Length: 255
Image (cartoon, rainbow, N blue to C red; front, top):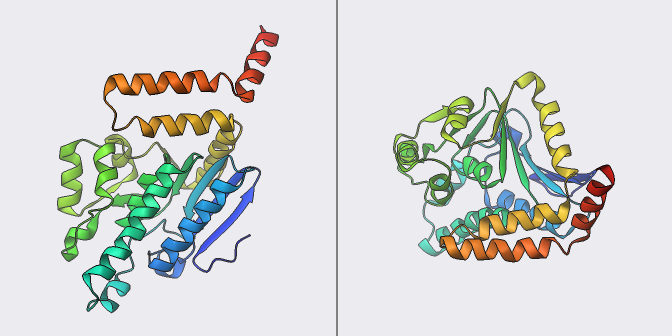
């Protein structure tokens, strides 16, 4: 168990469970929560027993986005201060992308603005059928500038701009149709389905998942031929790993 104030963290059976823990504020983000979340992710990355990371929100909402009260309190702040705070959010999304373990976001309720960004920074998103996703920043004269880089990689250019320009929230089923999320479950069975899914991931080879995630994102900006070559390097490396050798031995014995 953790001693964080705005994030809960524990590891059970190879699963690092991280939850945004401000249910009274719909898990709205402030600098302290972002910093604690980044610290929890680092703890999971350095723990050899962790095979999968599960990110969720306490209470009825995943995350309502940035805490607008902090924006109001900082209205007279400097550009330097604002950019430093923005880099904390940007750093969190990069931490998730660079994390050695698969990260699963379990979304119930709303995932809006920065909260939608955190969800989409995960490698896999599971949602209840009543969940909502959106970027309402435009409605207060703001811009979802940081999370935009993730959105553009998930949906078509036209869909992405519509979501940003309209500020409208979309249902989980629409998000699934757009390609933003992976699976939608009934609210009644959501907890069980999430547990079953992450347990299944935790049973996979840790080294294989780590290598797969690393090369998957490393080739994101590569030209086709460079990506093929990078894949060949990882292919060869994977064959030297103990998990692969045990897997082959098990397969041969079965056949």
